[in-house]
Image (cartoon, rainbow over all chains, first blue to last red):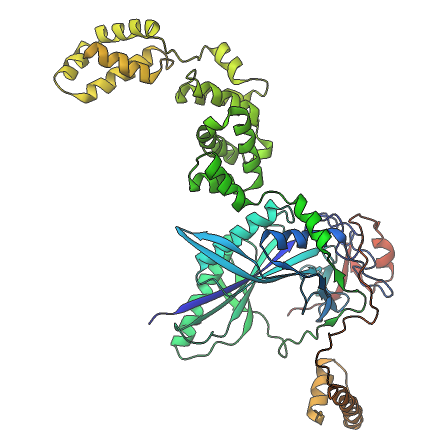
Length: 477
Length: 95
C-alpha cells in the first residue's frame, strides 16, 4: 500500500530595509527590548501606518526574479486575531489582492529537475515576541520585531517529498539573498518556513493537511516533514482521521505535536484596512526596478557554462551565492577566459575549503581575486606545478602583502622545466637506484613511478613532473 | 440568517463578556436586526461592479526607507500597567 505525499510551503522572508514596513522605527537585530518599537508599532491610539517604499521594491524584485505577475493595484487587509504580541489586535497583511502572484522556481533534486509553482507572495508586518519565562507568572512582551517587513511566499502543493521541499527552500533562500531582498539568516529568523503536509492514495482527492509552523533550518524542515508524513500514514492506517491542525516541531524529540487548539476554527475576519489606500505599481516603476536587478543565478549559470565551457555542476556551484559568483568572475577577468576551468577548480576547491575551515565569506577572503589570478597565471604558464601552487597559495593566504611572483622568487619555487637542469638530477638518481632500474627493465612498471618520485624528491619538488616523466622514459628506453 | 440564544451566549463567551439571560435576549434581537439589514444589502445585484477597497479614490503615498523614530521607550512604558526589564508584562498567555 503506497501513499502519495503532498507538500506546500509558506516562507516568511524578512526584507532588508532599514526601517519598518509601516513606521520609521529601526529594524536592527539584537536591540534592547522595545527600544525599536515606536508609537505605530505598539499601536497607540491615533497613529497612522505609512507604507515603506523599499519594502514594495523588494516585492517587485522578487516578482521579477520568479517570473510572476506584479499587481498594478493591490490592497492591504487586516487579519484579526487576539494575541498580546500583536498590540493592534490585527496584522496588516494582504488577502484578496497580493502584490505578487504566480511564477515559480526551478529546483534540482538529485539529477531530477522540477518546477515549483508559486501561488502568491504578499507583503505583511511581523508580530512582536512573547517571552513566557521568568516574569513571576506573567508574559513579557518585546515589540521590537512588530512591524518588521515580511514577504510571505506561498507555493502550490507541488512537492511530494521532504527532499523536494528542502531543495525548493534552498533554491528560494539562494534567490532572495542573491537579489538582496533578505539576508537569509535563518538563526535570527529572517527566513522561516511553514510546511503544509498531507497524504493520500494515488489518484484520490487531497487529504486533510496539517501545517508545521516556524521551521528555521533546512534540517528541521526535512525532519519535521518526514515525521509528519509517517505520523499521518500511521493514523490513517490505524483507522483514525486526520484533522486539520497547526503543529509545532520539537527539534529535541524530532516529533511534531498539535498546538493548543483554538476554541473555534480560525476566522481572521479579513477586510481592507481603511488606514491604507490601494498600492499602485506602475509599469515604469517595474521597469526601473528591473533595470537594477542583478543577473539572476539561473541565467548566470547558463552563461558560465556556455562562455567558459564549465560543467553544469561547476556552473551551479559557482552561482550558489552572489559572493562566490562575483569572486569567480573577478578571478577569470584577471586570469583570462582560457584559464576559466583552472580558476573554477581553485575557487571551488582549495579556496572554498580554506574559507570554510576559517568560517569566512568569499568577500572576506584573505586571498583577493587578483592575487589568486596571479597564481593561476603561473600555473597556466608552467612556472608552478599544482604541488608548488599549493605552497604558494599557503603564502598568499597568510601574507597579505605577497603575490605569487614574489613568493616564487623569494622561496625559489619556480618549477624547473628545462632538460639541462633536470637531466643531471635524473642521472644521479639512476646511478643511486640501480635496483629500481633493473626492476623496470624486467617489466615492473611500479619501479618507474618510484624513480619519478626519487627525481621529484631530489629536485625538492620543483622539477616539472611531465618533463621528468618524458626524460626518464627516454633514458630508460 | 439569524442568531439563537445559544449563538449569542457562545459569542459572549468568546469575547469574555458576561451577560444575563435578559441581556442575551435583548442582544439577540439587536444583532438579528443588524443581520436583517445586512441581508437587505446583500440582496443588491453587484454584478460587474468592482469591489471597493477604500472610500477615497486615490492611491497610497509611500514613505522613503529611513529611520525617523527615536527611542521613546521610557515615555511609552510610563503609561503601561506593568513593565520589567524593558518588557511590557501581560497576564500569562500559555498554561
